[in-house]
Every structure is written in C-alpha cells, then in structure tokens.
Length: 585
Image 1: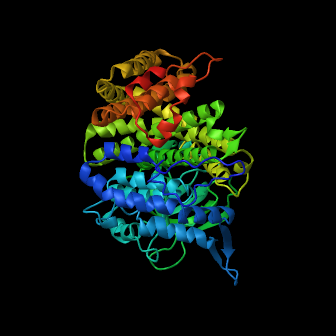
Image 2: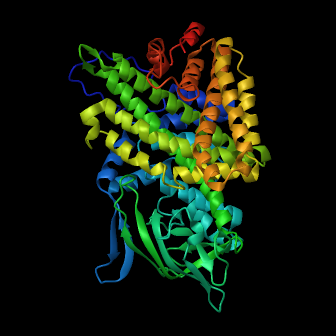
C-alpha cells in the first residue's frame, strides 16, 4: 500500500472508497513488470492507473447501485406484443460504457488502436485491466468476456459472411453500435453433461437451420446474439453430434428471431447481470464451423473463459485483502489496532499470500494466451492444463478469502452498506461457471492422461525453480520439487486404477499442481526482486506460501510462526525485507 497507515481509532470505520486500486497494489505492478516487456508495460501503466482510479471510486458506486437494483424482464409491450426486453438500472449502463466503451475490454483483442495501442492490445494487458475492474464489478465482466469470446469464435470458425456481418458490431467501442454476445449450453438436463443436450436443429428446404429447445442458464440474457449448441436431426448422441450455431436476436431483415426469455434467475450473486431461461421456437441459427465439431469449438471458448473466471476471482481476492488491511489497520480494539492481534494477523497474512499467488498464476496464464495465439505450440500445451488448474483452485479459494474478509470487518461486513456482502455473494459463482470445481479437476486429469499435459507443466515449474539461487530459499524450492515428484509418481499409476479410484485422485492432484505452480512463480519472482534490489520481500512471501500449502504444520500447530507474523506490515506495504527474515519460515 502506497499511503501511510493512520493511527487506529476506536470508533473508526475505514473505507477504501477513493483509493486507486492500481497504485495501492505494488504486487500487481511487480507481476506486470515480470510478464510484460518494457514497451508493453510503459504503454499499459497509464491505463492501469486510470482504471485503478475508476475502480476505487466511480465504478464501486455504480456497482453497488446496479447490485441493489437488478435487471427486470419486460416480456410484452403495451400492446401485448412479445418483446423480451430486459430493463437495467442506469448504473449498469454506465458500467457498460466504461467496460465496452472507454476501456474497450471486449474489443481490444480484435481491433487495432484500442486505448491508442499500436496494433491489438495483448491478452496480458487485458487481463491486468480486467483484474482491476473485477475488484469492484464482477457481474458485467461476464458479458464482456462472452462478447470477446463470441468475436474470437467467429474469427476462428465463422464464415466470411458471418464475420463481415457481426464482427464490427461485436468489437465496436461505440455503445450505440455495440451488439453483445454470449454462449448458451446449459439445459435442464445439466450444464456439465453437454452431451445430454436436447436442443434440436432442423434444416428447412432452403437450407436455413432452425433451433428448437430450452436453454436453462443463459448468462447475458439481454444479448444481441448467442452461440449455442444444438443437435442436428439425425446426428449421433453425445457431444459428437452437437453443432454450434449463431442465433441473433434480430434477423437481417429487422424481424425478431424466434426465441423467448421465460424469466430471469433470482441469483445469489452477479445480480447486476441478467441471467435467464430461454426457449428457441424455431429460431434461425447460422452454422459456425463444422457439423459435429460444435462441442470441441465450444470447449475452445470455455478454456479461455475459465482463465477469465480465475482472473475475476483473483480480483475479488485482492479487493478483500485491501478491505481487510484498511479496516484492521484503521480501527482500534482492546487498547490497540486490530491489525496487531496475532490471530487476525495470521488471517491477513494467509489472505495476502493467496491473493498474490492467484495474481501471478492468472497473469502468467494470460501471457501464455498471447504465446499460443502467436503460434507457440509449447504455450498452447501449457495453457491446456494451466487454465483448469487455475480456475479450479482460485475460484474455490476466493470464497474462503471473501468469507474471511467479512469476518475481519465483522458486523459491518455482514451488511449490504459495505462491499463485503457483495464480494462474498459474487465469489460463489466463479466455482460454478464454466464447470464446477470437480468438473475442472477431472479436466486436469483428462489433460494429463490424454494430452500428456503433466510433462510441459512440470518442465515449466522446474525451470522456474532452477532460477532460485538464494540459499535460504532453496529448501522451499526443494519442497516444490518433492511435491512434483510425488504427483508424477501418482499419475503414472492412473491408467491401472479403477475409474472411481482414479477420479477420487483428480481434485487433490489438481490442487497440489496449483500450489506447486504458484510456489514456483512466487519463488522465481522473489529471486528476480532479490537480484534487482537486494529485497527479499517476495522470497519471504514465497516461502510462507510453501509453508502454508506444501509443508503444512501439525493440526494443533499454528500455520505461521509468531516471528513470521511480525513481517506482515512489510509484506503488505512492500517495504524492504532483509535476507535474515527468511529464517523465520
């Protein structure tokens, strides 16, 4: 944190309102410098600072309003005609103007010159900007990501005609011209079991495809076009028989397409964004890609969305850490600052470590996204397993961090006047969207068994560990190596295990891989900081992370020794930490 800590006051109720979330986050600045080249970082900084200022003030106020006043479905107009209009509070439209317009978050991967960039903005910059946005508004980033993903799918698989007709509308930064996209897969039969889908595609004599069926969980229900899965008549059962179609809300002749919104969901979180139930009643759908490859194409989109999901959860974690530090340092109890109490310091330290690790995993993953798009096969192989690993752990852990942050603020945190309740509610969605935690763990297992994904990931982790030269940090690196060897040994046994036993391995192995990956990134970052400035601050954080997740204490022992808690303020403020401090771990 860049500002000086005020003296605690007994009845103080400190707030983060008005803070610049980028300038308050030295860790984000450091990680950006690690994953971006110098020219990219120089161009990105003013935009990160601008969005950080908006997130800490204007966007926070808008998000609170939009959360309290959610969307309303207007199915019919005053003359009884079906319109299926979704009405939003003005605050939501202001947030749309910020995300789609001013910052161009959905357009920057598809159009040159967004934010004055020479060419297209790299994914890693987009993710850093979105990470800041998500700290105040989670729900709207779903439509942003899905509009971005719809454009990506059309660029990769759509016909020239579809690209010419729809890409300019999907990628504009002019709110008056923008058409938002989405992807709808979930049916009453389930979301993860896509092969059980019952939506049917029938082809008219003139070659037009028409869609019939229900979609049960339709995020961004007010969209202008939806990528959807349907089974052409006569196609085989399961995922092999599914095709991808683009169904616009309005057809080229200006008539409304034949789908209706039955109702909007009453959700725990992401209340600002409209999620509904949709019925296709012979809606026109344009084939995207090849028949029978719809599911594979949709999974391309899902893999990118999973990384975006992890980014949003990481943003929530960071916001919760900031809220907790500001509150604990500014409020007095029992004759001193809350932040001086040992149990609270232990909670703050664990939250901080989790948030820093998540930021590193997400932004390094975004850098792989750039590499994969540039044709680097190794980056694409890494991304295949990196994404479900990151999505699985970070979205699940965000719930704990958000809950702990509410605990720090206590009674005020439980009220809707403060941001904690909204952060907690929003944190629960990430672990459900784009596959529950168990589903993505099984995807990690599938990537290891079918795609040989462990080898490139182990190589990546090992190369990071090889950079660690600080003697006091080498035991931490060795613990990561030991964990990696145990994982490799266990996964070698998978082909011979009965399926139920093998599946029970999926989640602990996915979690352990996340911790090994996160620890290797933190250790490598720590070594760079040590070599650059002599500061061991990041190495201390890395070793404490290893202690928490790869060398757990006995059940009755504290997670962190008392001596380690003494360094919380230096870690939070990014104050220099001497090498001697590493001995406390």
